[in-house]
Image (cartoon, rainbow, N blue to C red):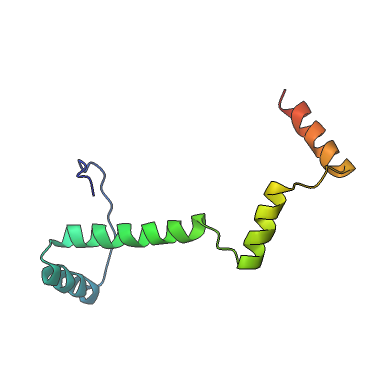
Length: 91
């Protein structure tokens, strides 16, 4: 990961037992407490964002999606009306 100048500060309260556990884990990895907590939080945030930003389709759904892209259905009256309303609102 690219080194960035750290300017922001985040604080939170923890119990003595939690802090001890954090410190032991940081020591085990050979990093300071701040680096351990930052890396753990960043890893968790990255995973959460990855899960929420991606869609996993079944093979059947993937095939249906690709087929719809390759062979789009003709616009019906409701879709044409929605397109016209959108264009009118964004002129």
